[in-house]
Length: 65
Image (cartoon, rainbow, N blue to C red; front, side, top):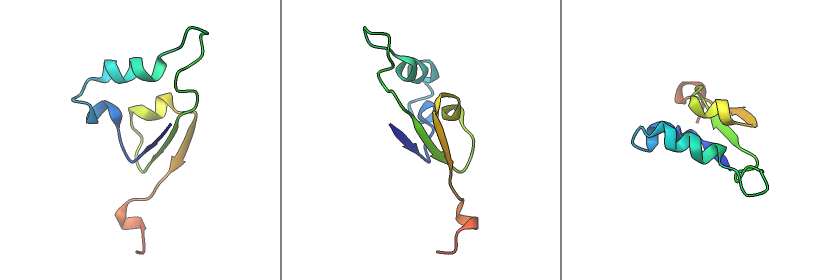
């Protein structure tokens, strides 16, 4: 799963416990249902704590487009 410039905890009506449960949910074999999480954001959010890979992004002030 890849989360791009989004904080699921804030975008889901501030139901942070539900988001945390979803990201930590395991199947009957004990493996994560979401096996690999990538977070790409310009700012650190709660999602970084769950990420396997964090990729930096730029803000509009750092772009030349």
